[in-house]
Image (cartoon, rainbow, N blue to C red; front, side):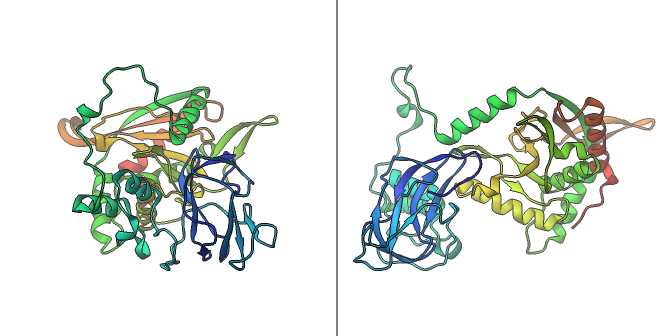
Length: 393
């Protein structure tokens, strides 16, 4: 099994998608794997025939272990020249080619495979609507609703509740990862600064950017916030550092400027990263953000797409939250939390005015960002959002 990131040392086999003797093409999915961070598929590094399979569903596999063997001919077996599928490839989301190899399970997102097993839907009977025919979760749910499922409908929630409490529910790998990272976050000396921001300019820019988008991705509030946050980091470089303590306490400067976006999914919170936000325009930010959020909710984010954030944005405005403080992601010096924009009556000159107010709360790592620096950074962000930002379309 290949290396899947600095923090990943093992993965669980969720599904074996091949059988001995089966012919595969380069890029065909061999196994569905779950790590602490993501569920994804292991691709065939080259074409050939499956000469042997070393794992079964439910096995926990260490990085570097051989999980399967690929031979040049159907007659070869392990030891006769077959190559092990281990460190030769990188574990990532399947790169769909549109081709279908006889005997292989149809191309489907991991979350769609799980749903199909739960609903009793045959993937071979579904025409995928995803990129190049990939089966999505929506395709499976539509097939189940259309009568192709063999499982009985799920009972109402009240009937699914246990009759008595006290049972322990094991944590999934993603939930364990979230628990571990949040526990590590609590060990960081952190503080929060908060400010109410006049969001009139921000909302006007959102409308203008959406109108100018044409047929492309329509920038939303999060896209504008990410571009302004990146500009804040550029002007306050202390926010682009991270505290490290191995072997000696030091500050490490991030190589790029990626902005993470906290995304809620049915598997838990994930943070995909939009890279180089300080160098790209709103339309490109919107396009990348849309692809990453879709992959996050589809369960197909790669580890690379969740790595390298300099700073993170968490927006709970869509849930009706007015203001909140977010916990730091270890390895970052700041996280920006925003709620919804609400109309408030505020003094304007000698009178009163109704303006949309957005509350921005930034949590800082006190080991890297002192209070005065944090205050200046928050003031900078407020000024940018209230009219000083030169937006890059």
